[in-house]
Image (tube, rainbow, N blue to C red; front, side):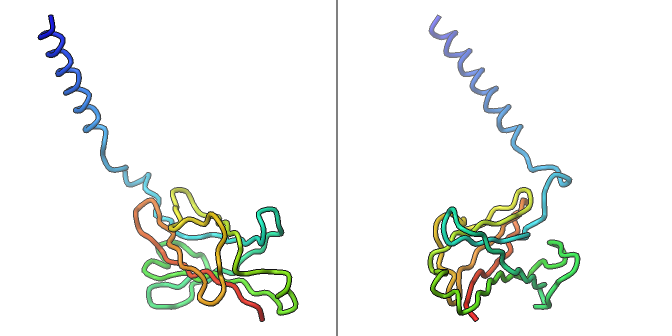
Length: 147
């Protein structure tokens, strides 16, 4: 009886492994999303505070600005820059060393490292990558300044 139970358990385990291994395959090409863009980026000085919008500039692989009909294919190999400018008169009100960031991205896009927590966007700011469903990443430099 013990031997039969062991044999049945081995057969069930082998079938389960075979089913799981057969179920793992790449996604069909029509379901892979190639978008790896940050559509919009917002900043808040507190988690409940006012929301400010960044200006995003997209560059193609040759370093040319792409400003119309932006797609991942048009800007492939390039990078993006997101900046926000405040008047010097607001320097006492807004602390760019402790801001919260949120982004609007397409389906399957992941921002690495994530935008949770506070960020210091002064000086050179921070660099993040937006990674699309196809595994391709696009780097963005995010910074703010007073003028």
